[in-house]
Length: 128
Image (cartoon, one colour):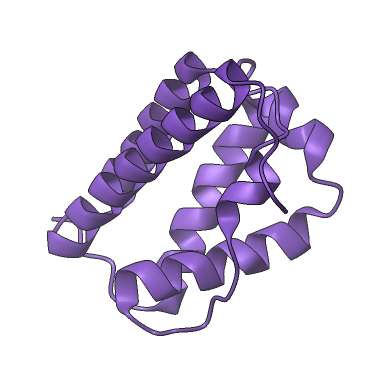
């Protein structure tokens, strides 16, 4: 039986596994690989982000949406991201926090997709 996400080591395993899959993915990997110049820095930020969200240990400060706004991401790309995220969570963990991780990832992707579509369809620039 798989354990639930419990600590920063679990967050690191989740994030490292997920982004390893993202980097190798033929559909959305190029989007990330073209944007992220330093994966170590990005992963450290993602550890803090998910630690804050899932473990309620406030180590992340920032606004993740603005850096995603200029990326060439479509709705289908977000759906693909969610699929990889949920499959990664399921492959490693099981439990209440793991379920929340999947739910949070899905909701974040929906919100980002909706906001990006709104700004792009109305020819608006997101205030940085």
